[in-house]
Image 1 (cartoon, rainbow, N blue to C red):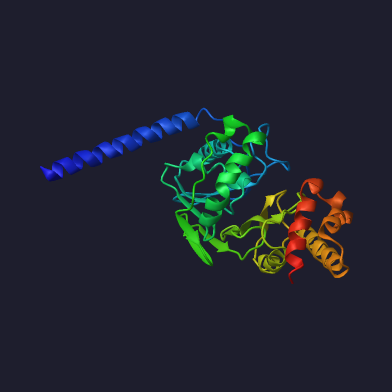
Image 2 (cartoon, rainbow, N blue to C red):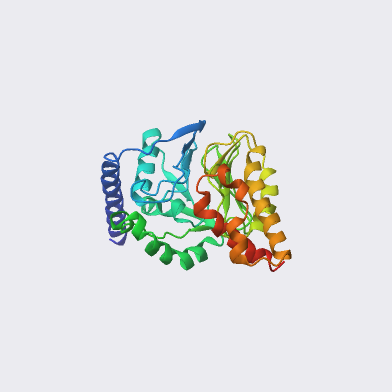
Length: 316
């Protein structure tokens, strides 16, 4: 009798899961797939706009993607809204019926993780840097509130902060079925929770926001740590690199030279200002002005970057 009840419970749970999947797949089929490009066999990327997050672009400003193995799929970042996350799911279904096993967050920033809720309830593990849970708990509530004005309630009401179920300190290998991904957690750089993903089969590196191309780099961690991490990042044997923002890089590691030049410029100019006794408020206004025409969103981020770098460098 007990075995019969257990069997009925298991059968009921299975039927409920099948029903949920049917509903989810049906709803998903009505969503236009996110535009993705296959940059290597089984490796797909949506290249986000270089812009600030807002309701018009539904937060789709970061590069997001997915990798397909013989058994399962891994998603790398989910985008800046649940709507974008659903469109990414639809894009996955347009290319494969294999299950999404992993959702990998390269770091905490909203344009990369606000789409996470679109992947809840499908059996996927969420993966992130060991510091990611703390970063989400600390900054998540602020991000949910601060982006409500620019994104609008219609988009923000369904956003949830989804913490990782698997965390990485050092490196971690994931197997998608004849396809190995190497995840690496980095010391504080762009943020204190940067994670990269290397697809060994295609030698494709998802660098997250450790690499910006075209879009001015944004400092939310340590400028000195970032420059140090670039040495290690450049040593990764990659044939192509997906930056967090900007076009695909195929001349690796030369493709990081613009970012390195900009960060070094900030360090050199601000160190000189500090030695000369120039106040922060004055120094940050003119820092790296020669770089202004080389980067999108320079006016929006450069003073912020210079302020963060000055505060770090004056304590050397």
